[in-house]
Image (cartoon, rainbow, N blue to C red; front, side, top):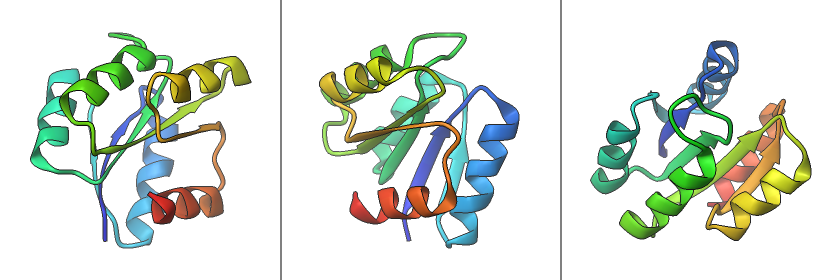
Length: 114
């Protein structure tokens, strides 16, 4: 199964995503520490789920940093904002993007595709 990092400032959304992924046998790591995200990406995690709206930085900046420092990691952007933000996430390097709330089937399909 996959090793997945979750960057989600909303605790309820983070726990729900972790529960869904772990129920499918994936190993998850949740963090808000952007330095730790980069360490995980360099250590070879398979997927990073990132919110676009975060207190420390914007998800778009994180995606651009990940693309330059860990170009092979799959990045899935999630947001409760409009489709423009999701389109920008893909334009700067997100592998795919989805609007919240995510249904389990969407999550499973996204992870299996990347």
